[in-house]
Image (cartoon, rainbow, N blue to C red):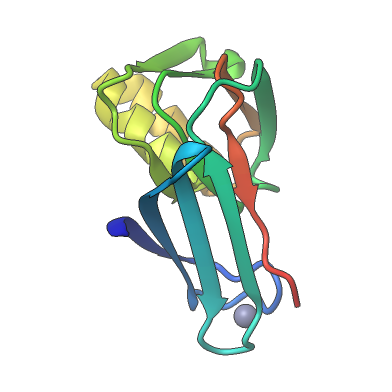
Length: 152
Ligand SMILES: [Zn+2]
């Protein structure tokens, strides 16, 4: 089992920035490669775990409202289209992208780096600061987008 990624985010249960999510990749004999997530809050003990088969299972979309959903923890798979219609920006993650666990804020920061436009960057900053409402729209044809939620 190979650990691919780790992130500490805001715990959806207690609201503290103590929720650690680890992502592992391993092979199952029948299903093939799967991604396993294990998350645990060091403060309140909220936990989650989930496995995602890396086989195709149909199109999947998700929409997040900012600032409301800023701290949601999301698995962002390869081959995903990300767009913010209110700002007219989009980003395409290729199949070479490894996949990442991040927050909705993290996705906006990735777009900030990707766009490299000062004005757009400022508008993203306003959205993160709660001064502007935008939507973050994700689309992945392999159906691999997942929101990571703890079980309390
Ligand atoms: Zn917690």
